[in-house]
Length: 376
Image 1: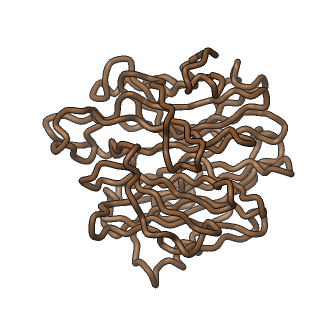
Image 2: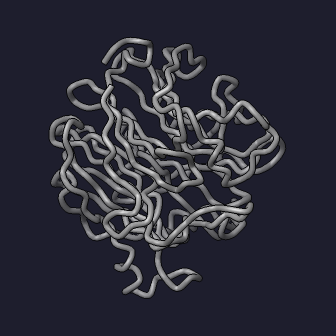
C-alpha cells in the first residue's frame, strides 16, 4: 500500500481542494483531477458555510508510470472563463463543479462533463492524454429535457467517472433539484450518448424524494456481468444505507430502488469500479460513526470516516470482502485501474478531523488482492 498527497489545502492560492476524480486512458496515462476552491469555508456553531458556490477551478495532475509519480498540477477549467462571458450566479462570480471523466475503450480520447453555477452543463474532450482539451460545448439542453418530469433549478453531473458500456453507450449519472442552493429535495437520473459524445440524451428518472427515499444524489454507475447497469447512490434516508437501482440499458426501465443492507451511508459520494474478467466489483465509501445514528444532519462531515474498500464477486448482491483504507476522516473518492494491474483510489482526507478543514487529496496505490487481506 502506497499513499501520496497530491493536493494540500492552503497552497497555490486555493483554500481547499475537493471532489477528486481519476481515470486511466487507453494508452495508460492516469489523469487525476479535483476542485480548487478559493473562498474560505468552514463550519461552526451549527452554521454551515456552503463552499460549493465558491470560486472554483478544476485542476489536474498526470501520471505516466501507473500512479507512481505525478506531473505538477495545472488548471484545466478556469472559472474566470465563464465570468468573462457574463455567466455568474447570485454571488457575482462563477463556479465550476462536478468535473466527471470517461476514457474511451477503443480510441485515444478522454471525455469530460462539468457544470457551471449548477445551472449549465458542458462537454469537452482531450485527444492528447489530457494535455489539452477542446473548447467546452454546452449541453444544458439535455437537462432541459427533464423539465416535463421535474422542474429543476440546480443540476449536477457525476462526480467521479462515467462508463462506456460494451455496446459503446456512454453513461453518466445526474442529480437535479428544485430546492435551490442546498440541492434539496432532489431526484436522481442519468444522461447518455450513443454517438461517442457528439450528442447527449436524458435517461429516465430512477429515484425521487418520496416515501422512504430522501434526497437521492450523486450516483455512481457500473456495468454488471450480464450487461445491465447498476447505479449506486447516496441519500439522506433514515435507513442510512446506500440506494441501488438497475436498468437493462443504463437509461430506461429502472428497477424499484432498494437499500443495500451491506453498505452504510454517511451521506457522501462513493465510487464503484468493475475489475476485468472475473475480478468482481469494488466499491469505496466512508462509513458513518456507530454512535448517535439519529443526529446526522446535512453537512456534518464528522460522519465521514473509515474510508472502506469492499469487493463483490456476485454483481453487488453481497460484499463479503472489506478493508479500511483510511481510518480517520475521509470523504469523496474515485477509483481507476492502471495498466500494470494496480488500483488507484483518489480521496479526500484530513490530518486531524473534518472541522479543521485541513484537507488533502490523496492517491493510494495497491493491488486488488489487498482488499481481501493480501499484501501489495
